[in-house]
Image (cartoon, rainbow, N blue to C red; front, side):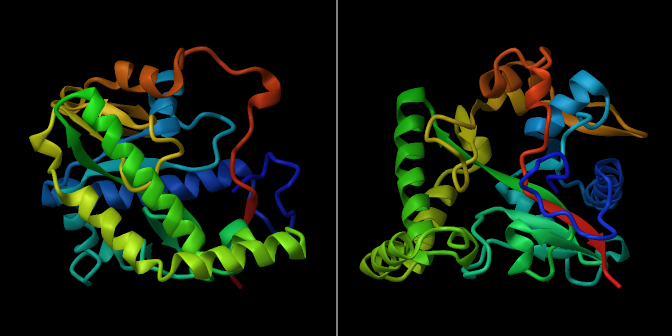
Length: 283
């Protein structure tokens, strides 16, 4: 949504950042209704969790909303998009299927009443305002093995992305680099093989069966998003905007593992969203 970044496209009728936050909040409320009714576990996560703890709402400059679920709950929730729940009828789950338009291996719950302009929105027409859902899996019973598993997963993720050679990653690169990426993608072969191996790695240990858990399918570095399962053993509810949201009881060590001193505000020049697109209402 990137409205605070100079590289974001600016278009007529684009929503202000606060309007985008409030539209994302509407999606969260509908997700929360279904999850409470069906006994599906979820927690606010990453920057959105900082928002809960530090601001009791969105970080003022944040431009997305993240939640996480144990994989079993994640799969149960995605099965709810079958017409049984009117709260979800308006939304489209943009799932991590192989599609040369979108380079992400998590699910994005999108409201197609709006349209994303820029970033992935130019290729993925169904993207509008959205919430990202991160599946959490079991890693290992010691940190060394957890890191080893994350390193393997990270390599598979990179190979998958390189083999797919996504269109949106090739917009502004020179012809020589574009050709090199194309050749590499052909050398790597079908991306399905890497996705299948990654899915096997993600699902070989359940969230409840390991001391360390984490985000295996989509993480910036092999070392990131490794958590102690005890941090998630209890759920507490805390204020977020005008609702109470579930957060892991171990939110403090979790956030410190991801962000360090998360209660310290960043310098003013760093207070901006991290996406590069705008949102408009569809005509």
